Image (cartoon, rainbow, N blue to C red; front, side, top):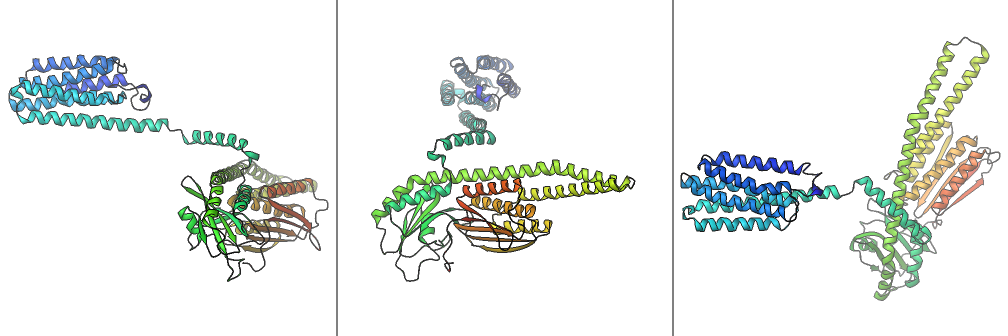
Length: 552
């Protein structure tokens, strides 16, 4: 049985040997079954001719001329053998059965042609077989019983089915082989992403910055009193990436509500409305015009632009068309930024988990063993006061380092839960650190039902963790106050202590402040560090503008 080279490592490790085995097996079966119906010399003679016709196809199955001609010779010889053996049979009824036995060999050259990836050869082989069988039926009146014709049609059909199954299997296996492995594909895509990111104007793949720029572009053609860019965050809700206006607006972020925002997301068409798309900030009875433009990349809705003007009928169809035209090319840019942000967050999270595992399985375990060794030394040594005291001090230091490592492991593994939210993650961390360090923790949490983008929440959590860790390590405080307020896109986190303040803070503490400043700048936030009255330090990070009082 023949096969082309690309299929060899998948389906046929030794195609020539396998082809020889299949042909020899089929010929042996045909001989064993036919010898009971016809004279041995007739059966063996025709089978020898069939074997001879198949030899070139075994030796050179992929040759452009010899391979197809040899398979054609196999088909013609098989059909002639079927007619001849049926004619020479002892009884007509037995002859019909003998013809069917010989014709069962037809699938071998048909499948061989399929595996050789000769698309047009199989129909030609079957057509040639039909012609030879018909000619034999016309030339030999003794082949008149209906059984001969039926057997011919049956085995021609079965040969066609066998070739079709072989073609389907071949295509499936080749597709599996040609498709890149997941990690190879990921490497290729990430390499392309890195190259493309370097070629972008300003190398900007920050969703917030792109959203602000998009608002500027859209407001240039469609004036608005308030505007925002929203994107999906999972769970059937949207997050506010950026917004502009005199006052902050509590935009409708649900996709299951009766609003122009939900309609635009579902229909992927711009929607206008005569009522506000916000849950606050617009006095009742005010005349408002709203326009929501979907950002569609391919067949996916990746975000929305919401515009509102304090005037009736502010968005006629011509203005809607202009806004949609401006927004259309921005959809792909925003999707790329969101995907890049997600990949970066996943990579960061995975690296933190990896570091936590390495520390836990390496340094932490070794330090625990050192502590056990000191305990054993204290238990077995005589009681010279100086030696015992030094060992006790060393044991205390080891215990302190192990505690620090455990807190570091907890920090590395802390994430903002998809369902718990940022405030819950910060509160859990503050409670754990406070319990370990003997600090009284005072929490004030005010979290909106809307969520910040996942990457922004992750950065805010790290800033809060660093501020809490600095207070524990360097402040010498007894109380810790943690305040978390989120009302997207606004957020404010404040960590205060009643310690000795910034005076005399070690270098590692200043390094932590630099890290917090970098994280705040990454999410376009403001880091504020100020003394607390009467004592201590307050570290605050503010994202966005403060909400209007009483707006929520």
